[in-house]
Length: 239
Image (cartoon, rainbow, N blue to C red; front, side, top):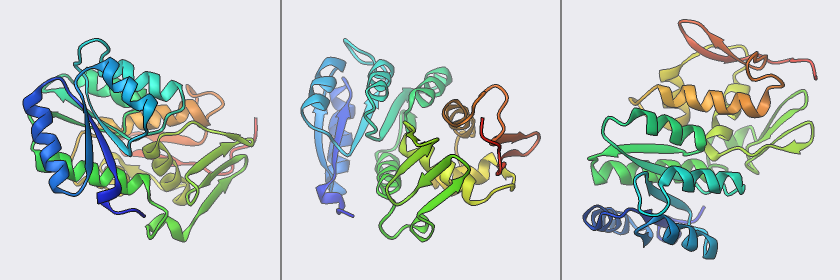
């Protein structure tokens, strides 16, 4: 896996004070940084070069961060995204995760915490080399196959458009079939968080169901265990 000095982070924020501090801390941690101060500049940058990760503010001139995230995911661009949201704007965080963001931080935030989140997300995005999932590179259940080494999931032979975090969550659940996990356990196992907003897990499960279930409103693979959390039910008959 390439070291941090070779990994590039695009910082998208119209507040020069925030962007300057973020870039300085990321560069001090060994990352290369680029800066975009508005939505159109961010999309132009992303069309010309592909960073390893994007730190994306929601409130931007021109084109907002949520729309940028949506456009990228609709195009199949799976670059990891950490969204920056205003304190108390829970609806924006939920929408951002639903649109495919991998993580989020609320302003004001600690630059050190952001660097830690960047490191965690990038580690997950490049997981195969030396990761715990490398010992079980492929898991399958009927027509659903997750290749953790290649970072690809397919259903009935068709590749699924999963974000890195969605693939990690699906792979984890499939590797532990029929076991119920609390949301807090999934946050720690998949996100590496010992604390955090458990609605993050809820949103990612909802997105996964939309992609792996025949009828997301009546899931048969990823089940809710009321009062606990979620479990993966293997052996689902093909539709």
